[in-house]
Length: 248
Image (cartoon, rainbow, N blue to C red; front, side, top):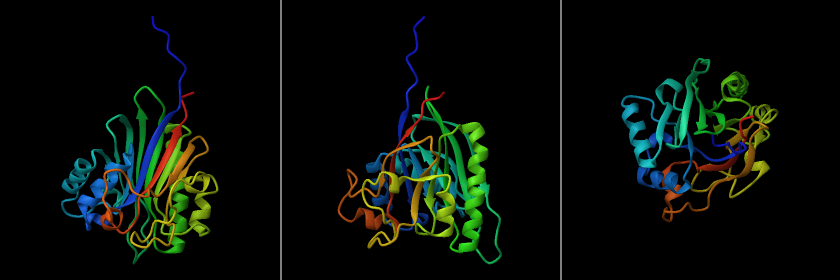
């Protein structure tokens, strides 16, 4: 019998990206995502109306990733992942609707590196309304806590918070979670608008079990051309290098 070595932590590259329903330069978008080489892609404003399934399949092909969950069932949030990750659980969540506002939702998944640790990922896109945004942040934290029974202590929330640090929802989330860019800045922080970034409204947030190796807007991902980041969509991508703890 061959003795097994000690379990080790696994590094994961996670990209959070608002793709504005693929309305911009899809060629540039594909080059940006492939250049960032993510293991996990958390999408906001994914296609969610007529033909959304075929649009999601095209996005997966163009980025070299596999569809996990989301789209119309989660009101435009989505998770894609690299083939090396196994999907242990996937669930789309719709959040309570405030009359007169857009319905929002969460794409959630428990993923696992083959033979390695599992971790929870939630892709979110919070409301433009401050009061609703705060309620959604609370619901997001509750969902993350519930998923820990399946995914263990390693949890990652990524998305468009529609709020800069210091806002009510941002403060609520960064009570139990750590702001990856604040913890290990690696590249720019401002994500919107893509042509003249002036606000940090996109974030990757992690539970204490996840070690942040670096997080930020990549200056120019490999394989991209001048202007690709500005042409791909109206947000800049946020790339986080994370270490997921070994199963214990």
